[in-house]
Length: 193
Ligand code: PCA
Image: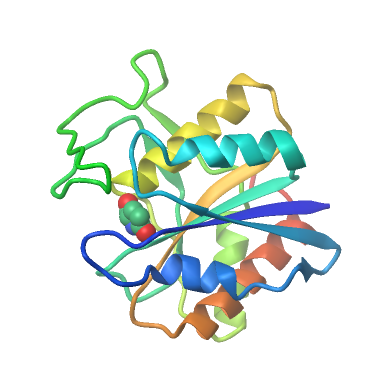
C-alpha cells in the first residue's frame, strides 16, 4: 500500500507553513504503507499539477493533502470541497480570484473519500485535538481538494483522497503525530459510508 501526503509551501508572508513541517516529519512507512511526501505551491493554478503527476507516477491507494488554517485550534479533516475560488489575499502567483468556479463544467462539490469521522476519533484517541470541518474555505486548499477529487472521479480511480487542515497552535511534532493517527485509520478503515 502507498499513501501520498502533501503539504504546502509558506504563504502570506510567513516563514514556514506548519502543514509542510508536519508532513516532513512523517516516517517513510506507517503500518503497511509506504509514505510519499510532496510539497506544493500555494497557487490556485499550479497546486494540483505536481500532485496529479505524483499520482500517475506512484499510483497511491490514498492521497492525504494537508494545509494550514490560521484560526483553527484543532486538526480538522475536511468533509467537502466546493467549486468556488474566492480569495481575500493573492496566492503566491499574485492571483486573487473573486467568486470564480474552479471548473466551469464541474459539480458544485466533491465529498472526501477518506473516513473522516474515524480519523477524528483516532486523532482524539491519540491525544491530538481534532474536529470534523464542513468547509475547507475558498482559498487554495479547497481548490486542491476539489481538483484532486475531480481528477480521480473523472479517471475512475480507486484512489481515495481528502484534505486535513492543521492549526498553527500545535507544535509540528504534535501535528505529525495527528497525521500518523489519521493515516493509520485510512490504512485500516477504508472509506466512510
Ligand atoms: N492554507 C491555505 C492555502 C495553503 C495553506 O497552507 C488554505 O487554507 O487555503
